[in-house]
Length: 411
Image (tube, rainbow, N blue to C red; front, top):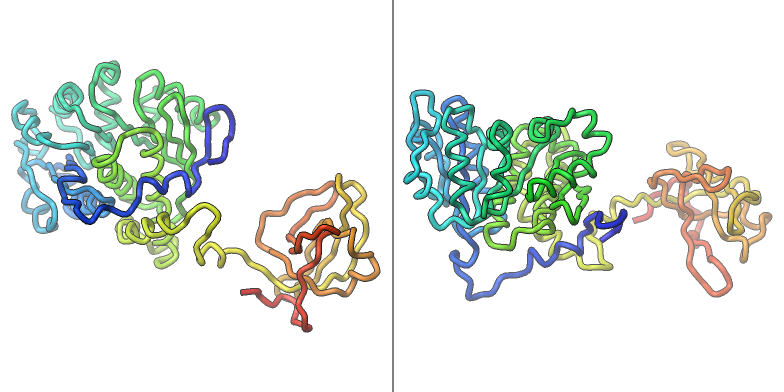
């Protein structure tokens, strides 16, 4: 876990392994929670979406998933359900759920976690239903989409009174409606605004963005996993399904919520590798939840996956010019390295002065990483990282033991 500043950390792989341990052979479905997915209306029947969210919760590890929908969309949703159970709420002519206290209580019966709001629409009874949930439910409530829109039009002090554990999952525009703070102001100070909001309303806030912010007002985790291919309809619903699935069988806290965001991001990255950033859909992310769990399980501290190694682009190059990097804090050479016609000539600053003179390194072939972001070392823009071996007398350069073509890839 990388500390950014007081009580703010960037999540790393080893921080969340505990949530994805191998299960005991004597386990049964009752050991892993019952979760509900509650939403839908005529205009947003979302048959596949609601089914996928429920399937997503099962993929994330819950034992039982219950899809709670208005009765009018039963025929469009039911054919897409296999492993899930179905619960029908009363509905009006537009397919919006009608508030019925006993029905709501029955829908929530024995649930450990509930994701509420996806495709719910703007039904007149939404506030009453959400108020009943927050008043009577003792499990974990994940609010997304129209669940957040409903909450933003209520007296939000109810969040301070509820006995449920509440997780809010807004994107920036939804957070604007909740916080009454302009989007541009949120962008300029998103971490601090998120922290203050979570602290004020005693919730766990998961603010979606390029960097996902997860905070309870005391501890804040930043999750930098995900990819451009996830910028597609339904990705937020997938996250809600994963949250419901995992929080149905584990303690709800800021780290477990961050673990859900991390898993979702990894699954999206793996899906993008197969389908590309253009062609992947939210369902692609669901498809790769099992692979993402394997990835997290197998990645212990100090180890990496082969796909991570393949991201490092190492090439052979020839040093064609060298001089002292006079401004560097530690003695270093400024190198000009030819990586062949396709890559071209790149600059580097290398601390290899102990074992090599300027005269002997010119013309030498070396191995360097060429796809790191350039950094400035004194007056030199170091574009590549020259690789070496640490020794007591100084750095020993990695170099081919036979002549190689400049630009040749190391694998």
